[in-house]
Image (cartoon, rainbow, N blue to C red; front, side):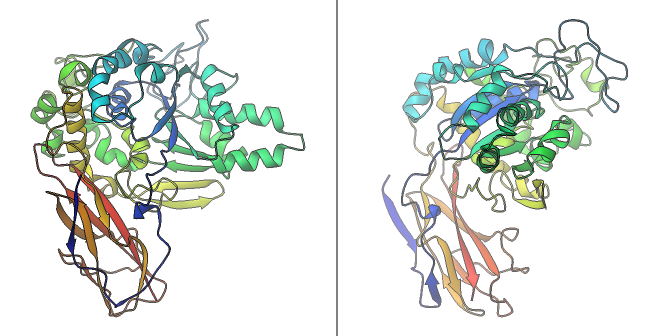
Length: 483
């Protein structure tokens, strides 16, 4: 893509620039490596359909079945299990288990059909065989069960102990029992040895748990107690954007046109791959789940959800666990205090090292951009040819990173984007420590308030959006530090 410069350069009111950060785009970003653990209910399936379309941006090293308080397989021996405050009120031998074949038998074969088209849009897409080689079964017997090693826990254990220096982002779409078992296996191997302190520090520094809520007791009972230095992000606040529509809508779809049945049916549930996506009353059902009402037009309106329109958004609750990893230009998975499609988190305790996502607006402000991006990638599955505007734009702030400016000064920023891109500038208040509103013009002029205190920061975001059927948006940020 040819580039052109819009706006004017940073003027002399800017005192000094810090060394260029990763957002200065001096090199392609290092792909985050990640493992997905999932109880594979219907919203996990919908999230997986989206996630696989972004596997060109991340390095997927595992897709692992696990249990949760909502879904567990039982031991096959008739053993009964019960915990209070669950969906079931009497002991059960299994609960709404959806099996361990959906990914291999449905999702990846559909991905294989569209892989040739995806690869033409981006050669970085992993092959179906590569993805299949990462699939494992983890700890699925009971909710929170972590008594024995499993192929899934062994995979995570070995990745945590390997020589790759990158963080390992462990996505918990269900419970954390398989992740906990991997850590317990490491503890069993090294505790009581001279290596234990070093191994525990190294693993704690490498592992990052991105939790779609805490869906079993394994985090509280084991991980937080034995591995308090591991950074854990509890991201369930993002459900307000991506969780079950029936939990938040009140009556019908209130999330806007990108979550309507017409939009989803026409733009997402199309073709051999997109047709697997789950929506309200779409006639599909998860295997092995007798309580799945979402394909039953008789049961659904009288069930636990208020009335919704056919094909309305159902749920992709587990998007909260991978959106922080996606390459949008401002993603910073190593620093959850910086926001983006995954929202912006705050540390709530240092031991355990726990972070929680902010308010609903933390994720909802990005929803339209994320939905258009998803729809564009669904279109990639249907055509081998790149069309005008269906590739993400290049968006840069000249001299991005960290800048210094005095109170009362003016900073004029410059944008560098692909052609045909519409730009906008705005203050990301949650990221900065200056508490007030900072004037930012459409041309990137920032007026640093006179009452700003030295050391306070102001985060400015540049958004660039393409034209076309599905406008695609990418970003850059600059942090202005008051001096």
